[in-house]
Length: 165
Image 1 (spheres, rainbow, N blue to C red):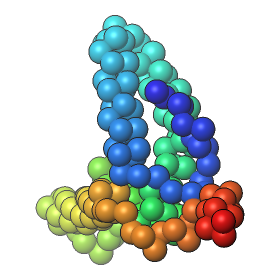
Image 2 (cartoon, rainbow, N blue to C red):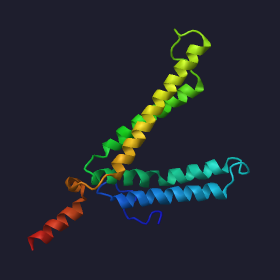
Image 3 (spheres, rainbow, N blue to C red):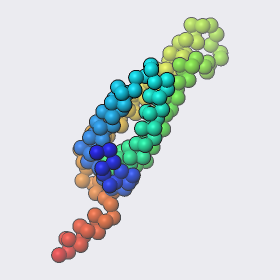
């Protein structure tokens, strides 16, 4: 089930909603099972290592499937890049605010510094949540017939040959 699709690393073509959401469900179940098998307290970092290996093993199939899903709703794959860059910016802002780095040296006093950190955190959280919601909405959209332009070349040629006869 994991890599049962022949297109697990193919960025061309289209993917249905079912194909995408079944992959997400299977991925979540596998991660939950791995976390349940390897107890985080007793494993001394093994759980993080296993999760990192799983993440690295599934990053290309996940990206390819997301791009093909975007093609199915008639959006280019660069939409995914834009969403991931915005997500990275949001996560970076959250991380910076949590580390307590002061960006506004003109603000003196502990209260103002905490307020600036809180506002920075909320700004990063808003960016992160907005891009996540946009991603979920895009992946849940119905198939757009105009997305046929992203169909693989073999299927296009085969369909044209069948229509002539």
